Image 1 (tube, each protein chain N blue to C red):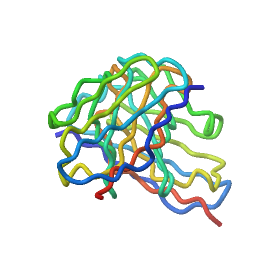
Image 2 (tube, rainbow over the protein chains, first blue to last red):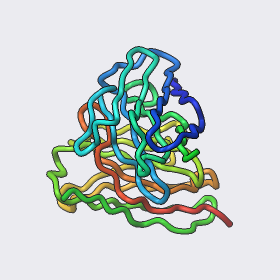
Image 3 (cartoon, chains in turn red, orange):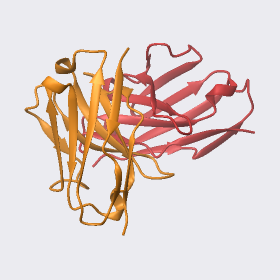
Length: 109
Length: 118
């Protein structure tokens, strides 16, 4: 069973700062099948990044994804007030078919 | 506009059953596979079940296998989740989500809350 571990659990930053979120897999994940989501309180998750590095429709270019194998990163170049939220990584294809990381909360410092 | 609207949640006693529905609009339902994903209160996301666009491939998380059944009706543009033998740990907000070929979930409903409690 593949496990995705996100770090840190909470990231305390100020608007305008750079955020770097990590997602580590217990075994190699195809980059084609690694995605990132943003979830705000009371809302459904929103797809941000798919294929490890491709931005979903309408996602600002301050969001970028990178990585391969077992190590993936979501970077927010300059935090805007609306970016404070919980972020999840997700893989597809290994047993179980879909796995999510436990989430990283980006909070205002 | 793509829309996914879940319904059918509620309060049920342990051992009871519920049937969730997800009605979709704004896209060709037969062109997409669908997932159910749940989120326990204050917790992260957990994949529950998958049904291929053709309906001929289905998969479940181990935590619900043998108790939950996913299905779809193209005539009603809907996907369903029949949940039997419910347990307290099934308490969660249940989302349906559209699956793209790369396995990412590009559209989500707002969720329906299932509470299992005596």
